[in-house]
Image (cartoon, rainbow, N blue to C red):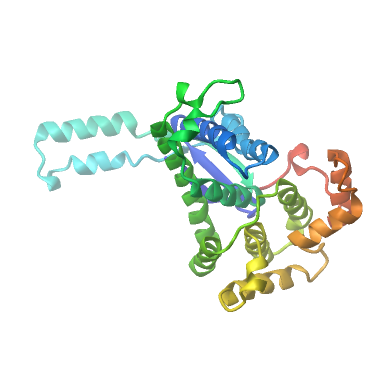
Length: 317
């Protein structure tokens, strides 16, 4: 089974599963995102590629490149089930004890750590994708090599893949509930289902990641949780808070309190989406492409410079 848990320093989550779990999840994400991208009217190709970065991590995860650990499979319960207390015959008790002897070593789970802004981006984008129900007409669409989807994919395949993605999203939401607490997570979820979310933005997610890595080491646990809460609201879009204040009074209070606390002290200001895009408009000509090196320099100038902590080998999640 898949598991999601927060990393000790709250930089992100650890996604865990056995080989089959992760291999099937990889296939479901890969197949359904391609199927959806070929049929969606709103899902831009750069965002599709950005979402596939999750699969990049998952693939390296089940290849054993990102770490693994033994997870108890509670094999000792076999012995309990085989005890006389359950009224089982002797032969059955012997079978349970044999199972315990053979499988008491546990399961090997592969794991990978993923930063929280990416998790929030994946979560909200997947939720929007799953809101669109596929139809039979989608199978008549040609894929990128010119074949009809119906030649290798079916609605049953799509149903299976959507279920796998939905389960992953539910694990992300469950993790937010664990780390933020039930009331704040519930408020976030209510806001998501009643709010008109903006189109997902990979470059804004990159800005959140940059700001997180620059500031997190110096931040208290409370401010890290404020960052997570504020980032979740920003990725979901905060326009509805201003347009419908009576309906979103609780959300506005949570969001404003978190950003106010974040913007005090030594570290750089939290990158609010609208302010980020306003700064982008001032720094770049909208009619020309933005190159990665120029964008990275813009982030350094705006939110502070950071050396890639993953390259040093001493990054503690």
